[in-house]
Image 1 (spheres, rainbow over the protein chains, first blue to last red):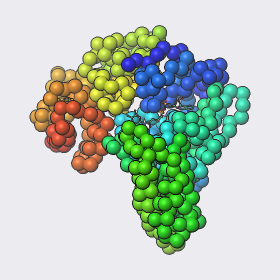
Image 2 (cartoon, each protein chain N blue to C red):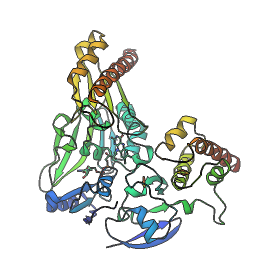
Image 3 (cartoon, rainbow over the protein chains, first blue to last red):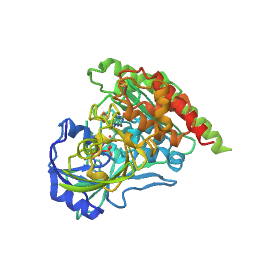
Length: 285
Length: 159
Ligand SMILES: Cc1cc2nc3c(=O)[nH]c(=O)nc-3n(C[C@H](O)[C@H](O)[C@H](O)COP(=O)(O)OP(=O)(O)OC[C@H]3O[C@@H](n4cnc5c(N)ncnc54)[C@H](O)[C@@H]3O)c2cc1C
Ligand code: FES
Ligand code: FES
């Protein structure tokens, strides 16, 4: 099908974009990569009165990596972040997660920030942000920018803390601490599909966490520091199974998703712990 | 309506389009280039894939106005100036990489960009590169063969 009609705006700078969004209020929708919004428009599941296309806004196509972490601007496409050696060196989980996001051709257009705002419960990047304790920076006309921590950013399935009139200008992913390891594992019916269930895992010298996708309304972060310290992966997997809130749909039953989350968590925790050991050795040397 | 200019297959083309005009429809209906096929219009089948400034993208998930001023290559632009088939096109013909041909424009554009970025792809690279394109006829084996064959042809011809 074809998208319903809308008023189209293509602002050239941030000020213009924020003004257009403020004027549109709840009728306005941001168009970034379009890889989630345009399918919704084509299927007529969304019908915004105004579309504010940010693809020409100067200063949003940014990506920076430093000792603190990686910051991706609103026009940093999945493919660019995936290919960035600097970003991968600072936080290797980003590249590993991005390789599981859709197909390479979709990644040429889709943006990292768009994926966070879209907040699909089965999407990979929200789990990465939640696992690492990252944040999203929001701007609105006439106000100061605000940084929303991941724990408050995802408010429900396809719902984020972005208010009408606000633009997400960038997202921040904290760096991997020394002596730590990360892993992303998921199961999808077909390559490139949204996963039935998946887990992102972080193991540091002080803590171990699992963020689960596809098994709850938002990414579910489970602290398994105690179980990991004892090397008890079965207990860690059990803790994950107890915390997730999967639902049944045509693709899989709730029980199967719960089972998957446990199995994937066990595998990913082992991967990440092994990686933490090897990077730890290198850091001590 | 918006007046836009696209450089399509090296030629400047103008069109007057509403904001909601998909690039796929702009190419097919406004510019008469029906080589770009439309299957699903939600990004899943890949047959609408074209090159935007050289990068493969879904033309059904791109608005024509968004890419005003940019360069587009469609399947019609893959052959040489005299109409001689490109190495990727020849390899598809040689390896029986198509049957009904509906998916072929998308596979050709995707494979052309894949081999430009990665001239000697592994089996894994080819599978990953083509994973976003669906074909209901061939069973994929011959398409994968064709991409490897195209890599050989390109290597031979650049010697
Ligand atoms: C076939 C297919 C398979 C896919 N598979 C996966 C997958 O496996 N995993 C996955 O994670 N994703 C998948 N995706 C989605 C893809 O990752 C999208 O690129 C991403 O979800 C949204 O990014 P976008 O830039 O395309 O956003 P858009 O589609 O432009 O926007 C999405 C939503 O976010 C809002 N938005 C975007 N940017 C901003 C901003 N800066 N400020 C405020 N609001 C904003 C828009 O208004 C809209 O509501 C798939 C897509 C397709 C078509
Ligand atoms: S028509 Fe564009 S991906 Fe199917
Ligand atoms: S040749 Fe018929 S769909 Fe691929």
